[in-house]
Length: 197
Picture 1 (tube, helix red, strand yellow):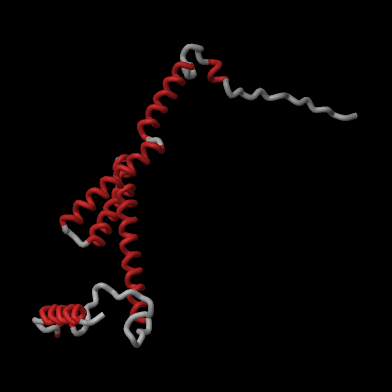
Picture 2: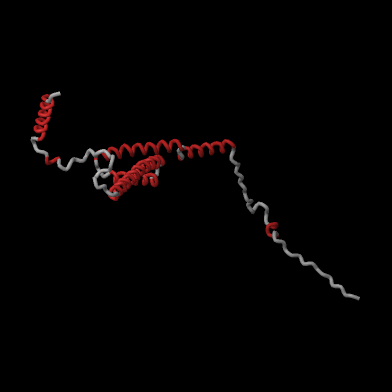
């Protein structure tokens, strides 16, 4: 027959044995504070503030366009005044105004000044470009005139004489030439009246 052993179960201590042994009031309880969610009036107020801030920050396209046109008009007037005063050569002046407008358009902290700078840059830059293109066209026309072969007679056939040219013998006219021409005309008239018909 088998000998059976009797197993005795050991009682292990539980984790919370110390807490269970301590009095209930000695350990403070964690306090949870719940915040209430935003109400509809709070959300509406936040939306209104956000809309007002955006309206103050952003200009409409129309206002930006008007400010840019104002900058272009002011640049045109200032450039015309400075050109009349002959402060600088026109190309240098328009290039400088264009560079100033570009600096304002890129680096000004105020949106109004940036829009005005953009208009100034556009107006002066356009004028500067037209001046450069016009000078290049004039140079090309002069080169074409120099490259054309000249006719032997000097002028093209059928072309009217140029008003700026004077005859080569104009300086050789005698002083009494008009008086002699008058005398010749008087003699011709006298001979014509004496001739028999």
